[in-house]
Length: 475
Image (cartoon, rainbow, N blue to C red; front, top):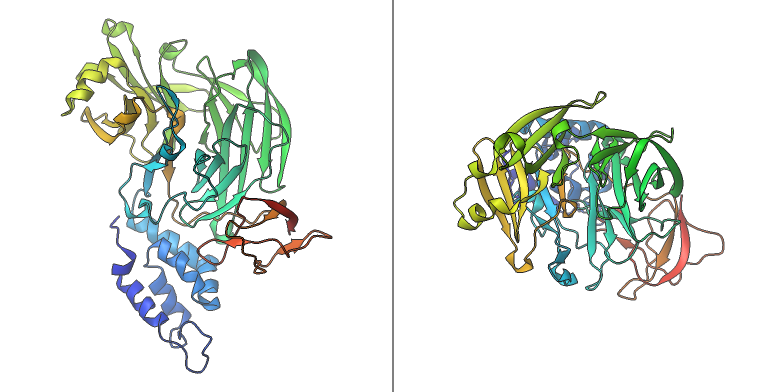
């Protein structure tokens, strides 16, 4: 899809010009659009980049109503899908440790592999989330345009849309665990202007077990709940750092002994499923990566293979029959057949590069972690290419530090919380009584010392994290 700068779009220029013409009969009006019929505005707005459309919600109540109209949203989605066969995508990654241990917090920035305009640092970042120099935000998972984050040294979870900069702070989990495995699932309903999401925490177990202890947060109830899930066999979940792969609404974790544990957060049966890896990849001491690309659950790893006389090989599988757990080998390459114009990469091939991720939309592209570098590999051309060089960290990325991300055709909204939240004092110390509709105080509470902070769109609510003053309830 051809990408355009918002300011270069003729429709954007027309609307910006229009926005400077005040209605003489109504000085309070931001824009005089009385001469434009709804149908004309529809045809202009639908041709703009989505980010511009979202920004134009603040022009007037009329524009807000038009852009929020389900018909207009369907029209935009159809128009965007017709222009491009694949959505904009990127790979977020974040260094957390080096060979001496944890890296300095100021170096734990979130990086992106894409140079598409949607992911430019000024317009697409996580800087709007509450953070401190010694406690940066850490990405945990993404699903359908929303991202689950956490304060690096605290159990404070955020659900955010980095495009619209909407976000919400989740209530703290009822239990405190040092290590958990995280799963995140979001189901958007763009025409209704809302979404449903769930966060699943698998608490660490120190041995083999036929059950999992979960804590699940639901945006519908606004609460954490405990659930003990039975497994059809023994699993080991004591590897602390891992993230779930979400496929068709089902969360998938790799257990310590290379079995896939699948759990459906929307099924209250209290059961999970075990999916075995391809037969010749079971019980091997090698690095592997689970992911989703082009609507299929996939797996790739590098390992010593008997049929290649002990030479390391790369294998890529796709789960052809999900119900039966049947895998199909899609690609196999001897590592020595990979080529690069970088001598460092050629020399590092036999140092077992770590599988990191599948490309979000291109099934021919895989990502590896070399010492200090993020590298892409094209399975059709056998070419290795450096994506990013972080040699000063002297360590490879691990797959739990890398997060494939796709932008949906229409931004996934972050629904206002239905749970009790805390009104806190802003970092600037200023107070405000500008609370959005739907915000009500709990009995006996006061807003006198509280401050609500809005996102740049002027239409959303957010709460900064600082000193807790009062509790309010959003109804």
